[in-house]
Length: 93
Image 1 (tube, rainbow, N blue to C red):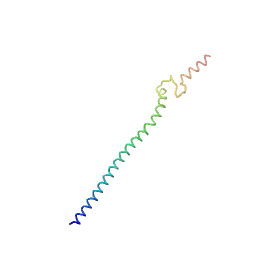
Image 2: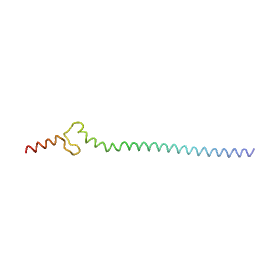
Image 3: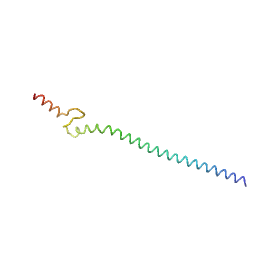
Image 4: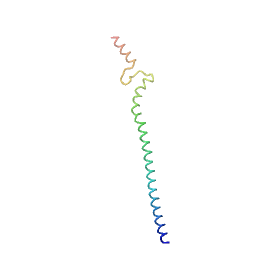
């Protein structure tokens, strides 16, 4: 009978050790899952936002051209009206 109690006690300790190790592994997996999720969110946000920071100013420079407002110049190039005014000034001289 004493042998049975010792055997049960060792089985119970082994079961407790396995349960504690399982609990530790599950917590680590959950933590890594959260880290992985938020890392992906941050990476995709950067992938989608950073190009917009570079494309935004380029699109703004073409905004007046697309809207039909030709009073200004596009990226430093003269508008057709500016060229026409320059030609009229040159011809007047």
